[in-house]
Image (cartoon, rainbow, N blue to C red):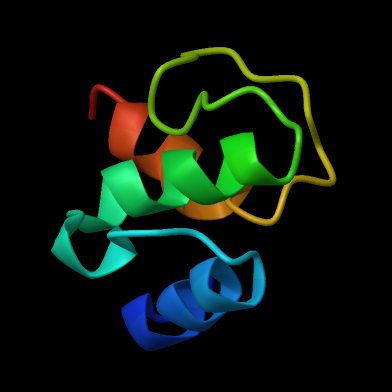
Amino acid sequence: MPTVAEIRKMAQDLNMKNYHFLRKPDLIRAVQEAEGNSPCFERIADCRQIDCLWRSECQQELDPQ
């Protein structure tokens, strides 16, 4: 899983504005959207997108245990 600094670098590389003010989940969703993907981080309990960069942390956060 990328660090917050690495995610901010992704946002910078995507020419996103005001990404410094976002919390990590919101920052990830903004990067997802800027890349043309659904901003679904921590929003889908049974995600089937196996090759997603964010999957391990995303699905772990939604695990009810």
